[in-house]
Image 1 (cartoon, helix red, strand yellow):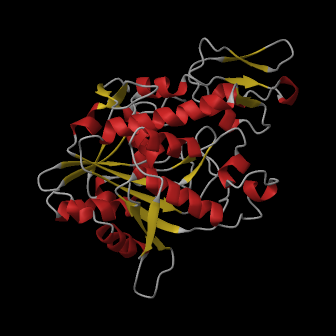
Image 2: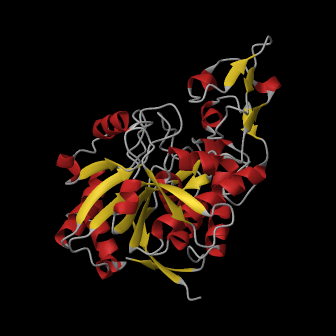
Image 3: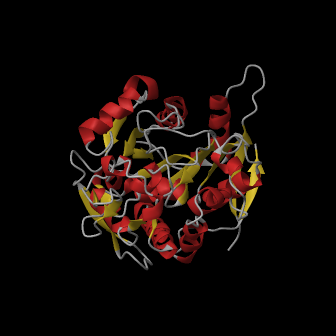
Length: 369
């Protein structure tokens, strides 16, 4: 298999040039014009950001992609599916309000937002996963499957379960309906390290499934019969008192995300963009964002989501840690910055499984614009 071409540009801007003009130049050089957009519904998969988070991609990035699609006669819409956990995006009305609050309105982006799995997260389509190992079918938000073309615009950042979130997570986890997200998460159930738990009860506030209660010792306990395995409790615990039952379960989660990504993309034109800036240690699903763990790097684009994620991961790992960040405070045990932040995770399993099922190629040629 020949190397996939991934194009990138840094964050430096000369006088009279902006990052937005650089983004447009990049996607054109990367070949987005090879796609026939004329009269085609074009789903632009994006994360609108949880209100309170300040690391999510700003609407101006999306406007560049929307305007380009429109200039080619396409009919674009921004889209995401509802979340499993407690927050502002777990049903469509709240989700839309959260998007508007973060600036994603038709006036700022030039197109409409569509919550792909409907009002309650139940409007999905069962889609075959060609070559799937863990999932033979995937439950994908209907509006995404109704589209003729899929583009992804991702903020590349850390994640407490997947290790990192890029194109694969944006599409695979993001396009899964609420039932689809349950399927992807259900291999791994977290447990409480009692001697580290302070009984602060923050984790229970973020559990959408009522799975966390407290014993006579005031320590948290997780009822695995109710637990969906979403890992939200792990992300909000300030005391590292909750961990995954087995590291292998995170690998299965990553593999399922790759399989869901394949279900979304098979048989349709697709193109992918990732922005490596404000690289927070946690997902943009959090209602807060910690300090960036590395300096801003640039914008990456290409047709291969696996190669794109691998190129972004390599770029992050080649960057220096910011000393004042959580990464800078940790003793480095791995060559992977995200694993040093989340030691129980191994994001490379997204890449290896994506290659295994034919989603893409981990070998890439990096071309600077």
